[in-house]
Length: 591
Image (cartoon, rainbow, N blue to C red):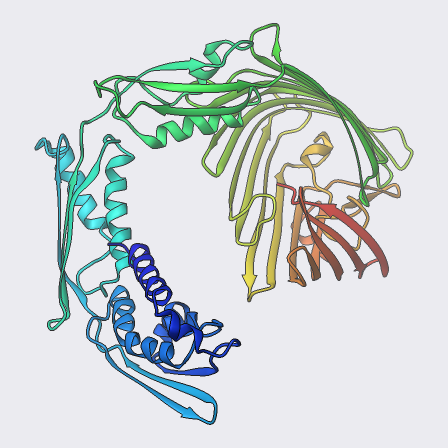
């Protein structure tokens, strides 16, 4: 019997014992209930267990309690304590129970010495059924299951741990190859005097299942090739719940489907080549969206989006976006193709943009193909971008630059919650290269990295560390498009300074440099579940050489609110270099 089952049986028995007490005994009690107090002497490790479940505590406020019932519960207490402690691994406790009446009040004294716990002496794990075919593969799997057994010899024998170990052993078969696996027999032989428990678990694996073809239901608008292209399931391979969950996750993450369910019939008469049943609910193919927003970096913002996820009736995804704010205006479009069986997503992208930031007006055209791949918590992308731009610096009509650049980006998101992380880290690494021999105005090699680390401090505190490093290896920044150079400053970089106002000064304007370094430390104290306050220090700058990379500092205070789309931050920061205060507003993290 598991820990929950033992608790349930004990609590039901105690409730029944109370309810069947003689009516006369109940009637003579004080209508307000009997006044008594329990003094429990027990090690702290066992105190909560007894206080939560012992009848002397549970019935203390009952209006039907009287002296006769109190004496009855005191007599029952040692037996109950033994049962509860046995669940926790203690089979030979020493218990004394006594009552004392002073005036009109009763005192119940309980003294409990749990003694030495029972420990696991040994365990035996056996598997029968199709798994026991004598193959080297399954012999290795059995040894791995035994090695992974959590309730090792020498461990305290607790019912909860015993049940958990059995579930884990069964799960190893259920999830991989044997979905009909079941526990045939389990025994825990306890010797209280020797304080030793011998464990035995027999598992019947049932039949070995293999995957068959996909049976897809719910498709009316999109072709079956979309589902087949997303599927990691290979007909004929052994059953794996991980494969089924991966397929379901890919379908749910796909823009084509609003919902998806994946499974097999584990009651199939023939376990070989069992069809994989896929049921999907399709999304509409076309959608027009509108959005508005604001930030202290770029002011008010408006956006229009258009999506057609069945372009030319081929399940190609056509998207376009028009974005307008104080600092930039852009029109972008992309054509994305369905993912293949390995999870790769290919796309073609184009963007026209004009920006006016810190006295520098930039007009650019960028286009090129990209391939992306998401695996667990990592996202990888490769691309080839042709970018051409013109710049007016400080009102002086300017320079032109072009580059044909292969690119690489790798992102790791290892946090407890993506929208509102409290523990973990985010990392992004990028690389670009260009050569004058291939449609570029300058040879360069660019590297960039960014990381954010989250760590809880106590019950209400949180430490957030952030850093950025970037470098462009080139003989000069001349001929390198601004997208491949560095500027910083603003809401999520160095607070206390205007958006991208830190860089090289040229003709009274700010342009990008070849080197970047930014660091930030922030402490957030949550005043409630939704609201918090913050104190922070930021430092960083961009320059054209490592020697000129002199950091400027910003520090200040802020308020935090956990919004449905991520943490909302409102900060007041002092820029040490400018000796001015700035207000900063942002939502979420830029990852």
